[in-house]
Amino acid sequence: MTDTQREPGYEAALDTAAHLLGRRLEPFLEPGPGEPANAADFMRLATRHTFGDAWPRTDVLDTRTRALVSVTIAATLGTLEPLRGQLRIALGNGVTPQEIVEAFIHIEAYAGAARAFDSYQIARQVFQEIHAAEQPR
Image (cartoon, rainbow, N blue to C red):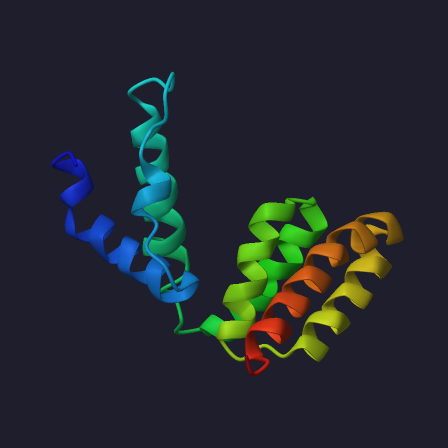
């Protein structure tokens, strides 16, 4: 880890990400084989901005609201793997499955049925995963 990555704002961003995601991000932030050295800079900057600057701004929009907005943005953009994480963050911060479905109804009206339906398949998978995890073994 470089000195830049040890800066207090970055550490706080990593802690916020871990709280929201339920796991540490560090294993996903290391550059892989063939990536240039500045890949670590990109990952650090994106992590710091997203989880250090944007998510902690709960004075006007609380975490629950930010989570639902983030689901809507990821679904509308069609970024399916980030959507999976945003759904988990939302469900972990008090957004109900019914509210998520209502968001998809609204996404369909404004972003189109094809995008909403495609993205909703990820929501369906997350709902099923959470349901299965809640069942007694």
